[in-house]
Length: 251
Image (tube, rainbow, N blue to C red; front, side, top):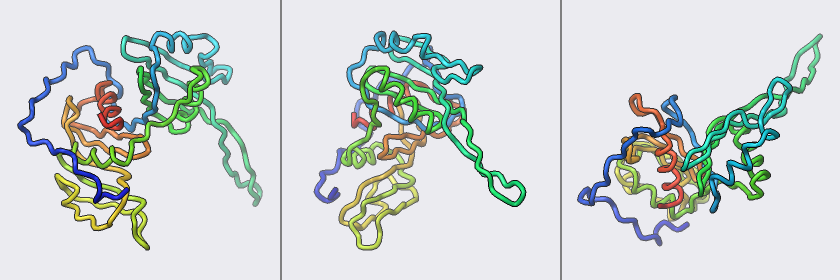
């Protein structure tokens, strides 16, 4: 994308009408680890009750005592369904015995959590488990669960959502020798990093912004993942997850 041909988004001046502070009483905590990487998936026009009915079936439940993967826990409220899903992935190790190598195959238990909203899914946990669970959901719901990939323009516009930009990774750079580069520092505008290339894509942005709940450091990547980093002792709420979706969707 040619950066020079894109009009800059409107910068916030601080005089805009302030949104009311979010009341977190009764909100659900997504993670008490304070930092979490969330993978987002596109989902169009699903009904929460209908999806719950398709998932909350005995044959989809895990039984690890007999080596059967599946859903370990499922719950529902008016806004989303939360499932904890486990799967077994093939792995191998190399053992050295009597001066030779021996390959031993085994299956590894991996787990993840999925939050299923009406128009998107958010997942966290082991990357292989997330991939397997997305395939599982695609099969059960008979729709393809695909990663939510922000557009190139959306990534550029996101730069203006940050109160402080701490690093930007650029790729697909129009240059004979340089194809990918990360610039780090502290800036309020991408212009301050003085990137001279005529065209490039924004691959990731790391910095601080207001989530509507707190001022938190996050990292957004063009692969549809957002890392929420620790902010004091504040956990990550479902409102953070929804906020992340709105960022990627350009809302």
